[in-house]
Image (tube, rainbow, N blue to C red; front, top):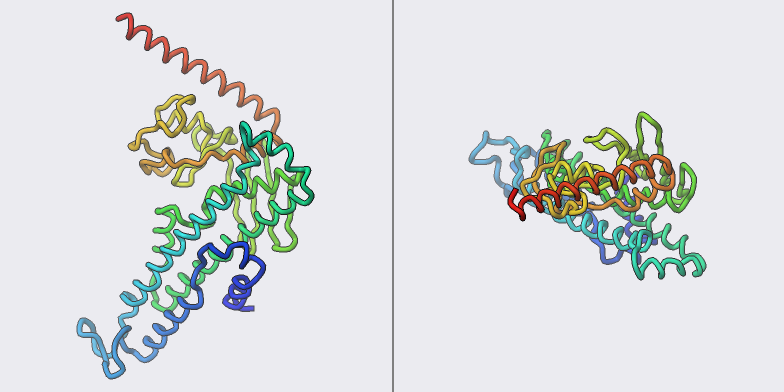
Length: 335
């Protein structure tokens, strides 16, 4: 079955009510734009030219200037950027809301204790998570196919360049840290090393040993994502992990050290000039995401390692606090 038919069936399926207010890729409309441009190329006329025109004033008569087609660029790239941004925003906010009670604190933790009393509550949460994963996956595939078709029609690599631009602006849908949190959410609920949702062919697995730790997700459309859970600074499995807005994952203590702030201050206290240790992008600490569900997964699956790292982080926090107050005391008394 062609993806266009599959995508339309998806849009009018069970998730239509659940995700009714969320944006989707206008796949059918954008495909029509590319079809019109391909017809233009076959007729060897410039895109946007009238029926009686033979060529473009800036190019050789009778040759299509599709490689730099302003009509396609404006209608496709601007529309895709807008839609991808809206989809990423909707997905992130819905996942954040879904996972809120799982790692609740204060009064919310007491409310959470009563949640298992409600029949089918866990299944409802899993179903919502499944729909969110399908939502982001189907739209990501639609964007990928549109950009691939664009490059085929125009004989260019502009579509691939646009994907790079999406990654640079942090709206690449399958790179969202909230998708990683959803995978950890499924594994936390399951209690085994691999959980599978048969209805949508989604499979999650967690791998941990002395050499490497990773969370692997097999998604619809033969998409396989492997998230390396190794901190690029300490070269160990992340502990109390944070994802910077550029997408790179670090231990909280390592990220605070790279940003020159104390662990107790947190990453929000980092300067806007502070750069990611991997990609060197500035201003990525302020909107960092605490991967609390992933941290819970590590706590459950790697107990000895997690407790060891917890003790080390506490010792480091005490050391930093002592050094800070020693400096303050010396400043106040003048020596």
